[in-house]
Length: 186
Image 1 (tube, helix red, strand yellow):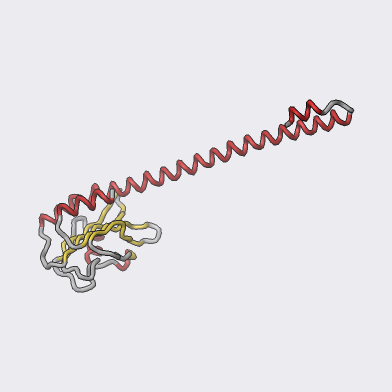
Image 2: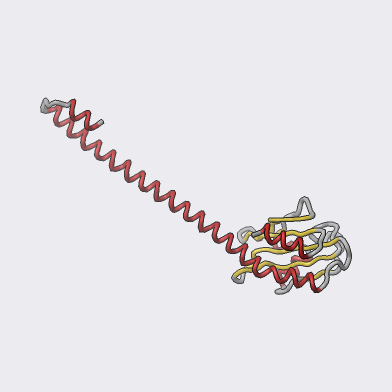
């Protein structure tokens, strides 16, 4: 999901930096999941987002920032950017950041292209996360079922061996032939 959307954006909007951030709802951190044009994109706490990402949280549309001061973008060299929140089922799941080192590189058309991808992309990311959780839960359930089956099988086998040993002790006490019984028990 991430790779296909980044690939689509790369061909549709000229940029110097493209980053997809995913939000961890527990830690409230936005971490870079995919980037293009930057080696080390940093993670941000939701309370300390760069200007464009912070504005994207509050907007239902793609935010266009025509002039970024140094350090206000995801990339230190960014002069302008397009920023969009990725939402699914009313929850914030991530961000898109598209930046350029050229002032005024983005217009209304690029903002609309980015905006057009945000809703399906947010839903696709959320669905992928949900399917991953379902797969994990299904695998855990299967492991538990196998453990129960093994435990039940081993438990019943040990109980049967215990009964047979008790019977062998009785036969031995009466002076009976143990050889056949021990072979069966084995």
